[in-house]
Image 1: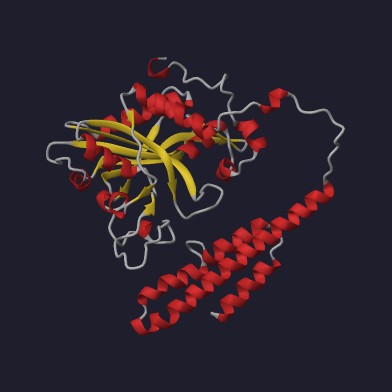
Image 2: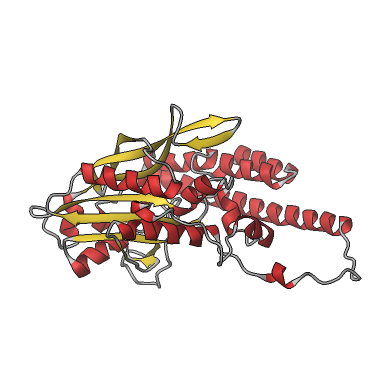
Length: 359
């Protein structure tokens, strides 16, 4: 413990920028960080060993996180001081024109509208639900067992309970799948919905943020099959990306709430460092999907002997990055007006959907 503490505290103190500090955070307390791996070893210890090692590891993790946070603030302050020394303001310049003050539509809002319009053409309604969810709707009703990694505190944000309240704590929803359960409970079958919205997971890097946007689809009927799922997704990709005959690949996977399950890839290639969709011999994973598990239907009050269906889920932010060439997911949430002016859309000049499914 002392060696780990001394090692990381010294490295944090020597970090010269936020990039190296983030690398240290991942190495130390990330999902596969050295300290996180030590904490996973607690389960292999005897109760007596765990009683001694557990508090020490938690204290070490807290100390490392506190040092990382303090260093991040110090680096930001130093960067700001340096910037203030190098910048100056000419108050005699004329004011900016009124056109510079016009607002723009955020790429996330734009893509949500595009996706909703495409699926509306296929008969899908939009369903919504709460962002603070119960343990039942977020996990149990979706056939996610108690030992599943998604239920660990390192992956999920749990809400505090008052002292003496022994009920399972509520969570910030980790996906929009609870909306599927709530809608099936309220409307029964048949059903055809999409569920867009904000979701939350304890992760942060170039392609992950603690809050992001997801859209899920659900179709329940008597004779729905994987063939219907494949058609729906290929029609969506074709219209959204403006590509005719885009090729997809379904790879067997496992999700607790679908059986069978599949990861879906779309055809792509890399040319001079640029990603091109719909051509080449490469593949890019874009979403997860499958046939709704009978236990999920049963939990929502739908008879799995009479009804079946498919479900899929994809990241709104990620497909926005792919379509509009945005390199870093974190920039979506930085509130940088310069970024928004560059990637945002004028309310009077938004991209079209090329005539929808019949265009």
